[in-house]
Image (cartoon, rainbow, N blue to C red; front, side):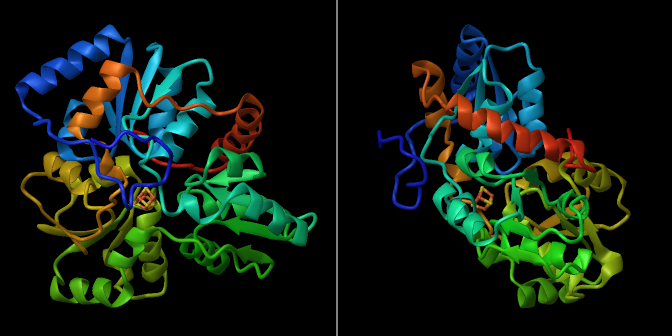
Length: 340
Ligand code: SF4
């Protein structure tokens, strides 16, 4: 088993393994969670067995809100590191554990606080808008965070004559620039590696091959923002495209008359959708669109986390306070994302 715990080394690291997610595992996880007074949260892109053992599943912001409202003294966040950090920022007095701190995020890694400071120095007076997929240090350098659900409204809330620095997702930035019509938005050239699995020709080809299928795009994680951008460009017929938050996607799955649905997002979401509407044929636009960081949270990693009280997430209090301001401004504007 690998034992280092620095963030963002997942590309070369071997996940904790050797534990089967059987009944004994489930019983032990529940027993340890109770003993630790811990609430188990799992992002929608987690392995099915991790989603099934969790107290709550959802998108990162919904889970952070659940964490803050929970009575439990410990939060075990089964997701990637920036998500657990956001939970810590919103719940500074709770113990926040992530089962494997090496579960980073290629999108969050595409800009550092130092790079952002240098960019700000080139554009004095500009307003910084950062997607939630960023580190706590980057959030602390940010004026307003956004999700893909409220990015347009966040930018529209900024006076038209102020320059905007938008980071780190280039697809979401291009989408916001197109919808707002502003030409004073500078967009950082970051992206999520899962984007590569959801490209334009593939999206159009899959949609043409399944003319009866609806297309669900879940915008809460960076992996789907390219699909969001392509749908806006007209790569697929607009009437078949449904851009939905997690809760909205599950509601739509139960209500849809379509017998088949193409899902443009990380493949972990299929598990929740198939459970919600077993009679509908949900297929991934690209079944290689799997986040290797999310899959670092294995049954063995969760067991280790609960047994040993690791990996604890710490955010420096000053950084957390500044980051919290940016996150709270985000929550105050529009619909920041789907709750569960
Ligand atoms: S799917 Fe992409 S944006 Fe989401 S956690 Fe993985 S690397 Fe980051």
